[in-house]
Amino acid sequence: MNRVSIEQLLLKKINRIRKEMINTAFETGINSTETLHCSEKLDKLINLHVKYFSNKAHTEHIIAS
Image (cartoon, rainbow, N blue to C red; front, side, top):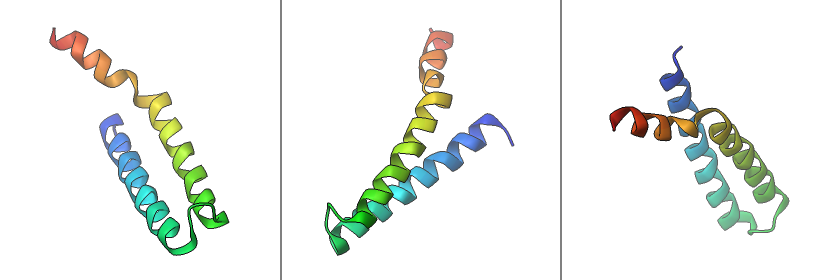
């Protein structure tokens, strides 16, 4: 599996967990344990994306220039 595929999978998971968190917040409240758990999962996924893929756009911009 290449880097782009891994990033796409990670972004899909981030989006899925984000939607799950929003739905959970509507159902159980914004400060519920369930919502906070989703938020923590989302934070971890976003941090992974930043750690491994944040320089991609910057690098592509430099190459294109």
